Length: 473
Image 1: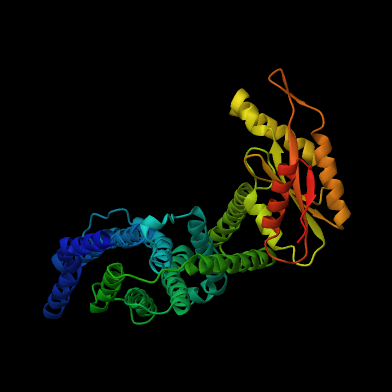
Image 2: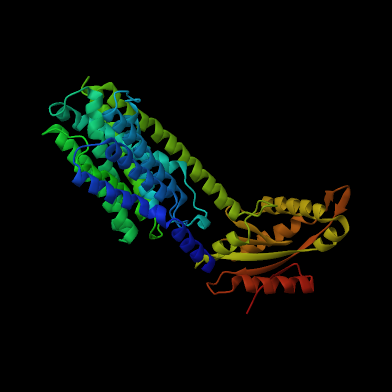
């Protein structure tokens, strides 16, 4: 632990200058803008975007106590925003236009990356804990954005056409940006409300809130008085990104609630998507075809997520069965047997504890491989004569146990049947192998130490050669 803390402090000291670079450049940019309001290439093309790149670098080199996914996704989100902003700024200053479609693509991809980063940043998961990013988290985020963007197309596009000018695609993208901010902010608020506040969550929420407010103000200016390029309020975007990057330098609270929140939000978004597609089917041409694409992708990804969830549940069931099953014989193992024993309560049952006689000699003379084959054959014989509802287990080595439900005479009959299965030899490796079994029998009387009493009776049966002995006080 001391070494880990020392390493974290060393990392923070090493990258302190990088961490302070973005805030320092932001203060410089604000000073230049206040002193010289007229946009210039240096302040609004170079310096403005350099701040965003510095914030991305700060997020990437944040301390190692961060979840690796949080660092990666927030770095990519901020970096992609910086690239898109750089291209947009270049096209505003220069006649030679650079890929005018790329800023819209970059700004659109920014939101899934931001949402993924937020969900993982609000849950500090140390890399040593073995918790890795899962594809279901990515699918949840895409389903959330796809579903809610379909609702946006249904509810907001018709109204937005009365306010904005331009193609339906450009109007749709214009209102999609603040909508993506609001989704990220809403999910972050829900998770933080459940977990409680920390400096990390306050900085992250403040950054997203400021970024969202700047986006909404930008949209309002475009729809009313008109947006002036390189306005002082544009620094709200940068300050929001700087605060998001700074949040990664502070530890958060360990919890796994974000995955449950994102899963619930994804299910809700899928329901919204179904409503959108139903309305689009009834009211033809009410929603542009390009706006229906996210809804169709959402449906497809929901089926993929469902398939992954079913596969995960199936694997979990297999793991659970393996944890309760003896690997050699396929019978229940000691853990399974003890767990069932604790559930007996006042149920009528008899417990049989069995130990093979003569098995050690087989192992010593013929080897452990033959011994293992013998145990498998013995298990098959035992299973054929017991009631399917009873629980037969191998506790380890050559020791077996049985919970025989019902009246006491059922347990006695089961013990006699089990002994009878060993009355004739096993043929293994060309040799006839004969073993016997000593059985301790105890009737469930709701008292503790049933297994210990059955063990005592079994060793008495082995010592006296009686075969089966019922434990009595």
